Length: 452
Image 1 (tube, rainbow, N blue to C red):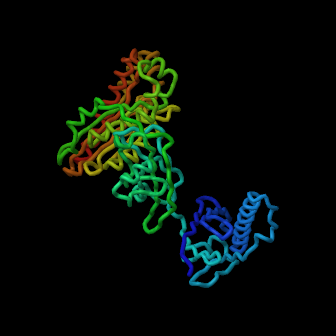
Image 2 (image 1 turned 180 degrees about the horizontal axis):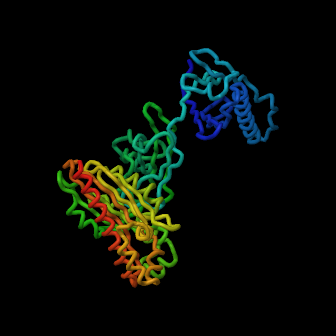
Image 3 (image 1 turned 60 degrees about the horizontal axis):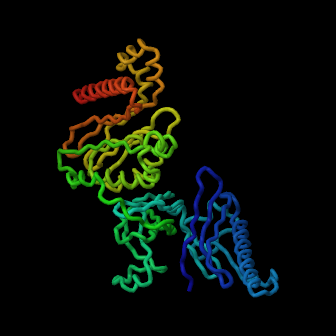
């Protein structure tokens, strides 16, 4: 009786290659994954021959290892030969070996290796990368860094575990939660908030990628360190007492937060000049990120304006976590070579985006007619103009419409003014430019509404 398994076939975009993956175990070969990268235009006969050769080579190597362990002579190549038959079947019949791979490896076809039958899954949902942060603290959200293919985070199944001792294993009532190697199931969500009882344990997360009826191969990540105790009560937890719930209909809550870009925090000047009072380990992103994510989530805000957002932090941390909390986000980068900028998140149940734009202030002052008064003032002081125009400051402007009260709209501006303490004149001009720019947008939107 043959048993149906899966062979995954990935068609690599923009290339003439395809990847074929499957697990195989034979009498003289422990189960392992075989991967083949073949031309889409190659004849099936050639591909099957290459697959057979590679499998037999693996069997031969395994037999040689076993012989060496027994201090015996190396096996003769012919000793490892045994019947190995590979074919593609359609409706139980072998298909034409002259077909090109692109036409042969389709989802209505099966791969047969001796008595094992594999269903072909084209472009299966896959986990390309899965890892956990180095620093994990009790009381704070932890989530995996995950890179997916042919699926989304929302479609996947995540399961969290912690390792337990043998003595703890015997005291756990729900033995169904115990997996091999003494791992206890904790949660089945994208992120997990470690508890005090988890301190001193390792965390493990598994991800099963899914897309409709397609199910890919499970991937697992284990924390490199142990869960540590949190820092105790944080000042923001007192503020959370006032924001326990999301606002009701016709109301909204707005939060603004500078999260300190890692490219500034993880530098010698940050440690010696900007934050000399702060121990270096508390400036590390793995530590700070846990704190500000817990704080931001706890405000239950409907609009969140963030500054100094690293591009990687936006896509790898903020988007995955805040979308799980019902928000969506827009990212706008500053000018120049830096990879940080502004992000604006909004609760999708409260608002929809009508229009979003961003400008580099120095460019806007040089080119926007509405900002000509600023341009004229700068022309009176060449040194001030030079300093102002060198700044890479950006402004983000988003027009929202309320889902609670249709036709009610709000224009939100988000910026991060020049930080130098002795440059208040630059900040004042930047603030004036931002306000003039937003006022002009407001008038434009009001006129558009009147015309409707």
